[in-house]
Length: 326
Image (cartoon, rainbow, N blue to C red; front, side):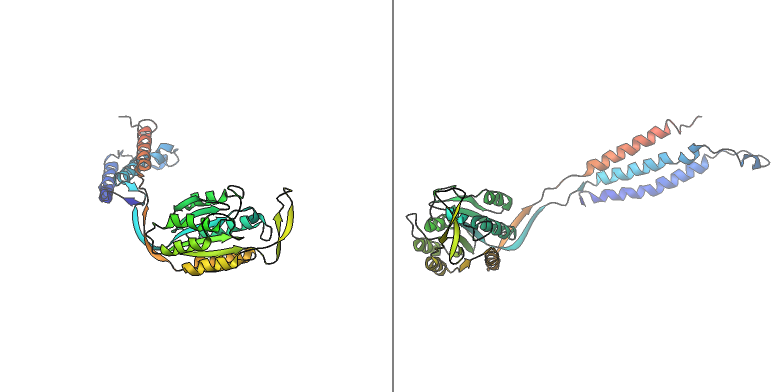
């Protein structure tokens, strides 16, 4: 907490003469009666008012102190803040074709990919990150943003069947490039995750990679799927699975990474997929300027209300229980 008018605290020095004046006045107003002995009054009952007689003055001093704090205008410490941090612009391109429901990763390929991607996003709070999804076609699920809460909610909603089935890897790259090409960041990256071979779309994956290279965009490709066979959803019997060979165009994915200066990875299980994202997380970063706004909040109202409360208590005691009778 900070104070907009801290010099008002000098008024607290007035407490010293106020307390001195109260003590002097108290002594001055003491009545005296000359008697031969006070022994007879020793066992006389003492009224509770004797113990409360200084309370109005105490309440007045507390009210005065709270009023001074209110005048000093206490505020929350929020403000505009410029800082330099490490970050890059990243577009995540995620395959949501029906084959991503295969069970070689747990609970399935798509859910495993979403969980690891969410952890990756949470670990890079200052980066601009966006999300492209693709199957037989592609579209931007979330433009690049630093509002990762929105991004994570949109990632959570991604499911197979949202768009035409198939695997258009070239379109997945091209859509991500269209979001990154105008970025002013020195480092621009696409993380492409797929489990198949390109069988849809008019843009060849290698052509899309050449376009990415022309804009200085690196593409990191991740192939998801075990080696051998895996259980895939049966297209003719919903809810059932059939064992089929895992077919991934590793040659094309490797070529995409090489053309753009990225790297190719193969994730055969959940643990390997997680380690791949951790490795990508160690990529070089570029310094970016971040401006954070924190709103200031006035806090004087609570102190002003406290001062009013103690002042009312002081008046209530002074003119009721502790009222002086001339």
